[in-house]
Amino acid sequence: MSNISNFGSFQIKYYISNKTPKIIYVMKKLIIVLTCIAGVVSMTVQAQEMKLEDVLTKYFQAIGMDKIKEWTTVTFTGKSVAQGMELPTTIIMKRPGKIRIEVEIQGNKMLSGFDGEHGWSVVPWSGTTDPQDMTEDEVKALKDEADFEGALYNWKEKGHKAELIDKEDMDGTPVYKIKVVKANGNTETNFIDAENFVLLKTTEIMKINGNETESDSYASNYKEVNGAQLPFSVENKIKGQTVSSMVIDKYEVNKEIDDHIFNKPAKK
Image (tube, rainbow, N blue to C red):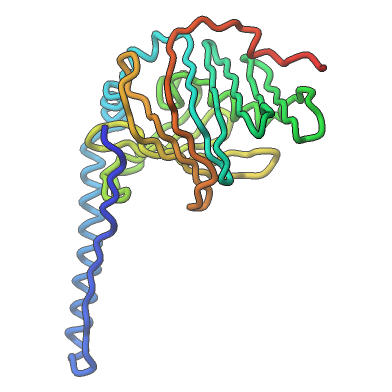
C-alpha cells in the first residue's frame, strides 16, 4: 500500500462581470449546485454497491488478518515525537488483551499497562514514582488498544455496532467510511482505502475522566511483517493539529513475554 496521496482539492473558479445578465449568473449557480448533487448521488450509489461485509472481507484479506489471528505476542519499538521531543517508545501486546507501553522522557520512563482486568500507570513527573490505578475511562481506552485485531473484526461478537456510512474522497483518495459504536460507549470511524483496502485514518470519540475527546489517527508506510501488512508511521491529530506521531523501527512477533510485565508494579 502506498502512502496517502494528497492531490489537493479541485477548485472551480469563474468570473462574472457587472455587465453579465442576471439570468446567466443564476444559471451558472444552478449548474454548480446540480454538479455537486450529482457528485453526492454518485458517491452514494458507489457505496451501496459494496456492503459492509464485502468491505471488511477485502480489508481483512489486504492486511493479512488470517496471519494476525495466529500471533500470540507483538512488540513494536520506535520513536514518538511530541512537543518537539523525540521519545523512544516500546509497545508490547500479548493475548488475551494485555498491553504495556513504555515512553522514555529525559531519562525517565513513563509506563502504563493493562493485565486484562486492571490498568495502571507510572508518571515520574507527577510527584511520585509509585504506580497509580487508572480511571475507568482510561482503562476502557487501554483495553481497546490491547485488542489485537481491532474493533472491526468480529464486531458483533464483541458487542459493537458497525455500519458502512458511505464512500467518499479523503485528500484525493477514495475511501470507505465505517462507523463503530463500541460496547463501552466509545465510537470510532474508520476510513479504508477503496483501492488497496488498508486503514488510512481512524477518528475516535471517547470519554477520558468525564470529558469527551475526539482525535484522528493517520496510518501510513505499510510494510509486510510476518505475512501481514502493518503501518510504520502513525500521526495523531486533535482539531486538525498534530499532537504526536510515531515512526516504528521494527515489529517482533511471537516473542516470549512473561505475564508479570503487564501487572501493576509494587510500590517502591
